[in-house]
Length: 336
Image (cartoon, rainbow, N blue to C red):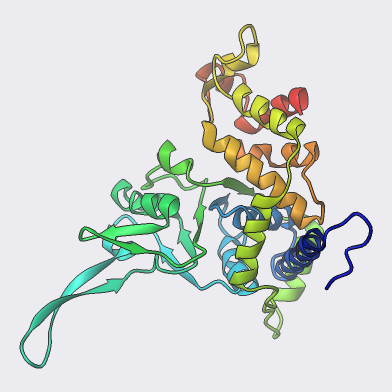
């Protein structure tokens, strides 16, 4: 039996040992991704936080910023089975979910057989998701929320764990279909990817234009990831942290705070799912850092990725040159 020390029960000691082990594995995964994708440490951290929280992430960035490489490398590091769908205007729901085909055996008997679509994996990359029609986009809604799909009236469960990492190009908007608010709300985080620094780009040139091919090393297994997700939900969260989360999310809604000029800037705001997402994400960030409980700094760091796709500004706010991130930053400064 493990020596629990004075005042500590063996079960408590076991949980702390598991916590440290999972935290170490997540830090190893973060470092492994950093050796492949240069200059995007914050993006890597936020993507792993989305997985730790059991959610999905929307990666928004210009072409050539390693969004595809990041998702593919994440699958290798975590050991998740992955598939990629290139979303196009002619993509149909059956191309995502799968379909039933009529087959005839040697005896002449006919029967339907279900052919699984690419959604039957643990990590799905939905590349340029906004290029598909709303009908095809909606095929992901049930899968993202309930982790199963319905084809020909029959429920078919998806592998566990199941995560969607979708990419979106913010520049080319011709021929695209903006994601509806209901689907945006299914994404735990919207991760904005910016251009790397000069030093990171220099490092990238040296590492990617030679003869050697860099492959990320596996840092954990899907079982480890699921254990970490359970650990996140079991972590304690202080009452003051809960109060700040609720105050921040509710302040991002229009007309909630009487006499507050900030609410005049917001056309529509986040629902309760944002509070749930922020509660999980701050604990996931604490676990990655090896801390046993989240702090206000975690709220400040994750407020924008959690809220930016769940709210919209009024015309007056946009006319003043304000952006969603600016409004969120002001809210964080005054509340957190």
